[in-house]
Image (cartoon, rainbow, N blue to C red; front, side, top):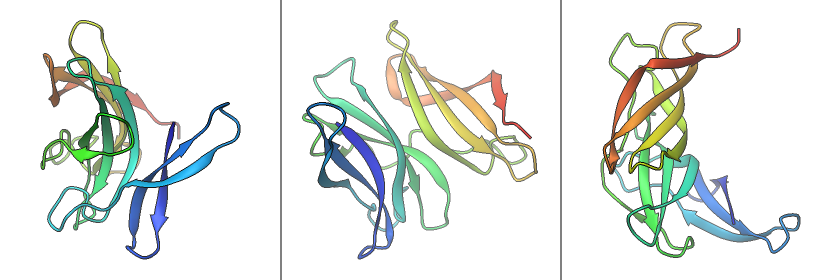
Length: 163
């Protein structure tokens, strides 16, 4: 399976689509699996970059995805699915958002990549930047133990982008 971004002309927002393949070369689009969220939601204007991982606790998949709210704020939310085809919102609030005002990642967070650390915890790597030029980079956050819906920033890691 491959999940991809698409622009929904009728709805006017970013969506997540699904394509399937038996050989990894020839792909068939199966259609949209996640669209824009409800008014007031973290992904009201659309759902963008995403990362799918097996849930270590339950027989299901977790999809961490970038949502864009009504004010163009980019945060990371969470969906879950038993079959990888039908997705439901895991919680209304995003699981991760921009850092405090003035921090290098204060403007937005995007492009989630979630890694199971094998000890019950996970790490969330993300792209971000602040309001000042040259603040772009890759950040890292760690789960709050085995709760993969709560993360804290790891201040010792920030990979700066090239000039």
